[in-house]
Length: 233
Image (cartoon, rainbow, N blue to C red; front, side, top):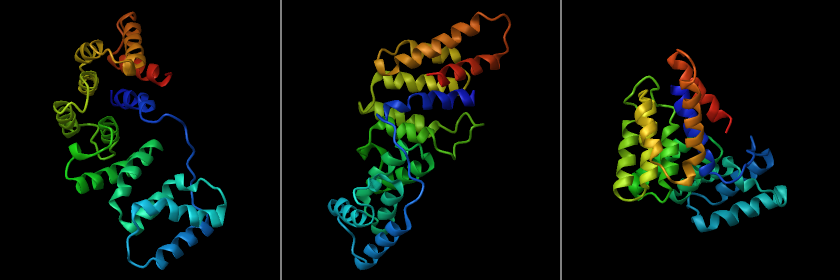
């Protein structure tokens, strides 16, 4: 069941990332040295976020010409580490999430929430926030209560119309799956009309339909069918 739950979440990652990107594993030594020299030259003063792109562009242009290294997470994180500019926190969360670096995304999300005061003040799409929270590695997979705070956050978002009714139904279905309640999950998913979730619903319904056609199958086979179906999509 745990595998099934996480595959459901991963299945919808396309909703938050419109294109594939490649991650550079390391920054070249010359670029790193240039960035270090720039930081030392600036002393302890903090660079305004409006100047960050210009700073990076200038340094990188010298070393790598027209390189797109600004897209590299390491550069963005380096700049935040040096400047502690809170305006970089949201881009860090969104970029790490785009690269499926969930531990880092959660790390900077926590800092962003601390800076803004609460989740409801964030400018990030609430669906991205929930997606990030679902991938927190500190979650106890053996505890049915480990996601309680996330589901409370979902309700808070919904009460302020920051999530739609269909979003709420989808998360309600996930919560049911978390506690092995397939009936509750099916009822919640069946009420969703948003096209965003239609592919998922079709896969889910197909898996359950296959399961009921099998004579006396073990319960874990149902979990496996849903997981495998989601992996194919």
